[in-house]
Length: 203
Image 1: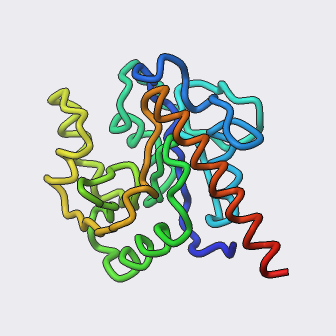
Image 2: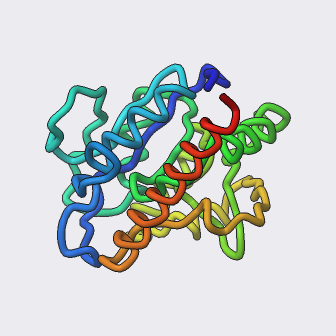
């Protein structure tokens, strides 16, 4: 894969994982952990990849942006991220099937609309942690945090946001519950087998 834009990517991996019952960023996935899988593949696309987290809990080296708040919500992490970047591509650690095609489409929309606050993926519903954010959204985030409103979806509705429609719902599958994790492992195996078959056919 070619690196497609000189924009930083931030993997959000500081969640509580209460529905999973354990830290899903550390769950085994492919030949490593879910967070390492995301980090390694996204490094092939983006010029810079960082992990948003509350603590260094990983068994590999990667640039990290620490969210020191005791509130478990991605909105509070944005303040620390925007101290480092003026814009960034956001992706949740639990969405391992968001592929280069999806990312390219979002970035192409962003390139044509750089004065907006955010460009966000949408299927049947928006995916707030798959898209591009500009620092211009930060005052709205701070205002809502002061009201103890941490819902990113609400902030996007209150901002100058473009929602980019996608039909491939399966690419946006996210891992919330143990059954989701089992299904993700199965899907990953199927994709790997298909890729191997295609490689054999092409050779």
